[in-house]
Length: 187
Image 1 (cartoon, rainbow, N blue to C red):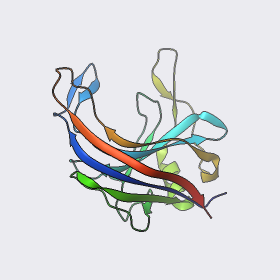
Image 2 (cartoon, rainbow, N blue to C red):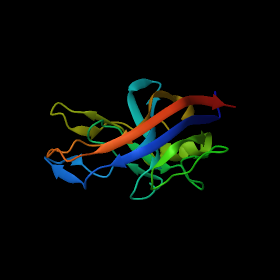
Image 3 (cartoon, rainbow, N blue to C red):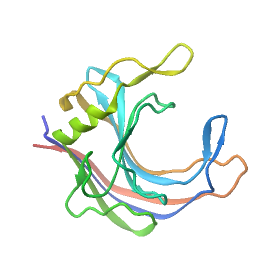
């Protein structure tokens, strides 16, 4: 088994704009746009149990702290948030990695994030319980996560901006590209 998980890619973010946040029917329909790398980490004994590890590249509001959103009501999965900065509990920058920015950029920048067993165990200890939808479609916790980092695998990944559709047709723009995406484990 690997002792370290690594994610590497090059990204540019030429434009990213959206109007202020509006909430309708308890849902965010427009708001500040941000860009993240997301790893969906599945529990190997039940792949229907997972959590998200999100690492922010860009957010005009500032960098995410190392914290956990207990259960995302749309996916029923907890989310561990961090950012491409040094001195983080949920991982660290790889060699030569670009850092988090509150502004956009036009050149391709290399980003690399690494998580060792100890950092992964910290994430697991702070996550709480995953959720499942009950018969009424509501997310409810049902069991605890395994605290063993070896019990998880990368089930999906995503790198890119999040932009919400505005109900009044207010213009939003995004210009983003990602290349050379790699995910690997090292001993």
